Image (tube, rainbow, N blue to C red):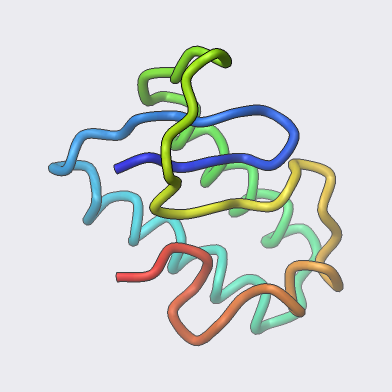
Length: 91
């Protein structure tokens, strides 16, 4: 799976990490739904850190992204507009 973080690049995550990625994404969705700023900041940082733990795709390689995450400085209000019932990561 290839995940892009806007403004940072792409990371390759092993397929076996998909369930864990969805769990972290679910935490973010709950925080956004509750409108809790502190929980949102923590959950979004955890999601970004999880993605960054994958293998960084060199900048000179371009792959289709399976998921695209907003920049790390995205606000709770911005995230509320982006997030769907499935979180940011579909699946």
